[in-house]
Length: 169
Image: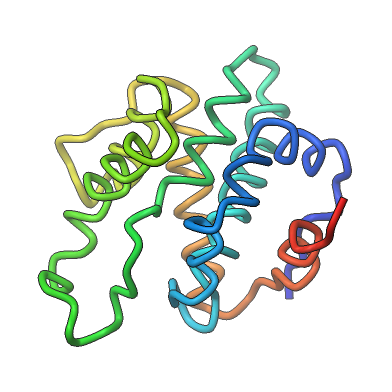
């Protein structure tokens, strides 16, 4: 079982740039939505952000870390449970949710253009025409694939990382 969330530097970065999102009641609703396996969208979004920041810091480049955090946290901010049979269009969720998440993030958090691009193209290569052109978008896209794979295989433990952001202070 892979455990993530122990790097205090990355946790501080996420809190600094994404604290307003993490504490927002609209983001907190993601705790109620299933993502992959028994992982909530809330846990998945935090884990993707953590892995994307890790990749960015290891790259030796100078990416926009703030946009990675904000785009990572909001990449699946579509605000519904795609497993619910009552959800209209759930059969094409993989193709449509990035646009919905981007629109919600613009409306609720006023994200910048880079953050919009990170969200919109995170489903590459499934959405083959939405190629991530900026390294920040690539980090989030790759992190999303890593986390989704490990979640589906039930090979990752998010208990620690989710609890860090649930604590006060």
